[in-house]
Amino acid sequence: MKRLLVTSLLALAAPAFAGHQGPASLDAALAQGKREHKPVLVDFQAVWCYSCYFMASHVLNGKEWTDLTTKVVFYEADADQPADKAWMTKWNVHFLPTYVAIGPDGEELGRILAERPRDVFYKEVDGLLSGDARLSKQKANASKGSMAAVADVLDTYQQRYQGTEGMAWFDTLPPLVRNVSDKDKRVALAKQRLLLLQAKDKKANPAIAAAAKTILAGDIGCDRPYVLDDLLEATAANYPESRQAALAPQKAPYETFLGTQVFTATPACADQRSAVLTAADLDAALNDAAGEQAVLRKAIDLSREKLHGDLKSDRNVADNLRVYLVRAKAGAELDTFEKQLIAAYPDDYVYSYRYGKRLVESGDAAGGLPYLDEAAKKAYGANRISVATYRVKALKALHRDAEAKKVVADTVATEGKAFPEQTKKLRESLTAAG
Image 1: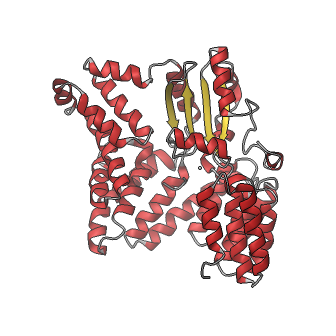
Image 2: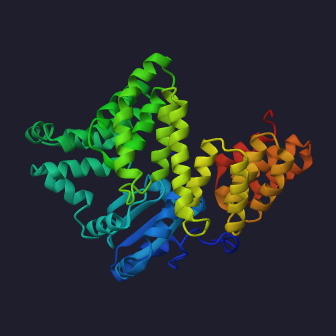
Image 3: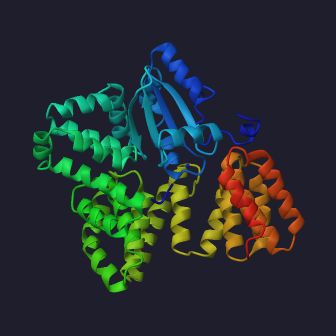
C-alpha cells in the first residue's frame, strides 16, 4: 500500500492533527474505560500519515465528533512513540489510520481501517459501539448458519491481518454451513481476501496474483487500488509480455473506478492518493507514459483547484499534491512547493525532512543537510531515527565523518532501547557504501 506507522520531546512534536486531549497512555485509556463503563476508541495515527490528515480535517470534528466523545474514551496513539508502537504490534495494526474499539470488558468491538468519508465513518463507528461486530458474537451467529455472519467473521480476520487464523476458523464450521457458504458471493470474496493475506505472508507471487485477480473481478469499492497494488507487485518480476497480459484487463475497470468514485465532485473514496498513484503505476507497467502523466497532471490540477493557494486549508490535499509532483518528476515546480509546505507547517519535522532527504538522494548533500538539521530539532521517537539516517548519509558524503558518528551516538543513546532494529540499521549506515 502507498502509505504504510511521554517525554519532553512531545512538547516539540505537538499532536499531529486535531490535538484532541485525552488519557496520557493507552493503558490509562483502557483503565478509564473500564472504570467509567465506556468503550475505548483508539486512533492509531502518525505525523507523516496523509490519511490521518484527511480524518483530522474532514471527519474528527463537528457535532458528530462531539457527540461521539461523550460515549467513548478517545485515545490518539502515535505510531512513532515506543509505547503506542508496542500496542500496534500487539493488536496487529499495519495500516494508518486504524481505529480500534475496545469494550469496557477488554474485548475488541471491531476496527476501521483507513480514512472514510464523514457519513461512512460515523455509521461504522455506531456499528462497532453497538457490539454487533464483536468477533465472539459474529462467530456465534455463523455457527447457526448465518451467511452474513460467516462473511463478517472472515472480514474481521482480514482487518486484523490474520489470514491463516481466519481460514482455520472457517474449517471448523459444520460441513453443512461450509458447503452452503461457499456458494455465497460475499463469503467467497472474503475467503479470497484471506488467501491473499496468506500468500503475501509467504511471499508467494503466483498465489498473490491469482487471488488478486479473483478479488478484482468482484465489487470491492475503494479497496480496488490496494488489491491492484498487490497484483502489480506480484507480477513485477514477470517477463514484460506476461506481465502486460496479466495487467491489461485491469485498465478499463480501473478507469471506471476513477471516473465514478475518485475524480468526482463528491468522491466515494477518501483515499484519492492511492487511487491516483496506482493508476500511474498501472500505466507505467503497460508502457503508457502519456497515460501515466495524464492521470498525475489531472490529480495535480484538481488538487491545486481545491487548495486555492492556501496550503493550510486542507493538509491532506496539500500533501497529496506534493506526492503527485514527486511521482510526476515535476522538478522546479516540486522544489517551490516543498518550500511552501515547510513554511506552512513549521512545527512539524516532516516537510523539512522530506525535502532534505530528497536533496540528499539526488546528490545534493550540502543543500539537504540544513533541512535535515532543522527536522532533527523537532523529530522524536522512531522518526528521529529516520532523520538521523539521512543526516549521516549527508555528512558522510561531505566527508564529515566525526559529526556523523556523533549523530549516531546521540540518537542511539535516546532511542536505541525503544527501537533496536532501526538503531541497528542506523549504526550500519556509518559503514555503508555511498
